[in-house]
Length: 432
Image 1: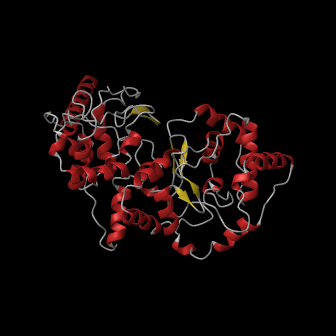
Image 2: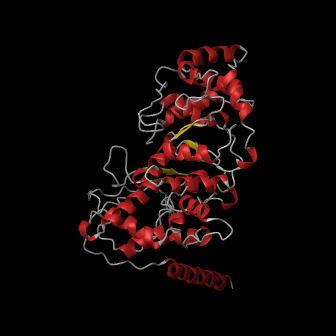
Image 3: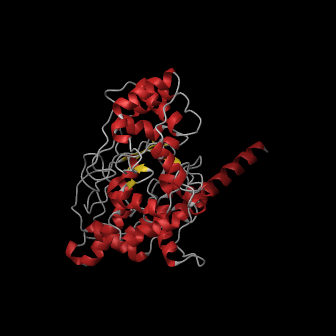
């Protein structure tokens, strides 16, 4: 009897595996001779260049110090490190032998030319929303870029997570393929913004928290998440910034990397304004329209003037021994740049009473900026914030962060700041 039960269980398992294998199997698409760059219309290539910029293709597919689009960028996940692949038109190591049909399948379905499933570190769950015309333009652009011979790095995923066929099960649970469908109750501008934000620019990939299996939590869309040792803040009503992210602020920040009231783009976010800068201004405005439709900024219109005036008129100083030390450090190292006075705000010298990083529940972003500064390529082009990590101890950085939290906000103190600084220092600057 037990033997029959055992054999029946084995048979059921084998049948189940066979069914799953049949479900997961995807055919290979035959390779082609690399298309000649001249075979693509210049206007199509130009359109693809804009889309590739808006999708941050080079940011994710270029290793620090490596050739553009040749892969090797390390993406840390809770399951292990995944490296981006070579998407230059090299025939041997890139996508030079991929037909447009193979490329479209990868973008829309998350399947490689050889039939293997892609890991969702590649955001095909967003790119599936792109129109065929936009995918064609991206293909034309990539196929006209310099070919670079660069072998893909082996991913650091443990067994059995490294079995690509298992990704079919992940897709069954979390992936819904299909093009973007306009919302009938919204106007063309809103739908254009949603198409860009949800599709090519895949904003939720960073700003939406993920569940235990690595999928974006749809019930927490844009609620904020940790990404590449930074915090991607909420883009919904839970964003703690004291000044609302209204249409004008979002357009300025997304288009230039600098906001009058919220600060400067840094870390992984720095790639966003660089990428969106090539979009038409109407597209950047459309993305802002999409986010302001649910971030609560409309309800706060007219309520921010008092906060701005208070920030300009008040030089708040903390009390107590710890904050006295923080006051001295801030005055010596920070105040000369971050003091605005009563005449108005200078976006290149952010007022930290209004700055988003000081109001987040997690001090990571503030600490990273103090330790590692902001490079000339980020935020306002050519404007830098120096790194203080070499001259300041962990205790020094913790004191400055504690001082700012106590004097520039009404929020609870951040706990264990010195240990937090030590952890972030050990992580290093990273690839941003």
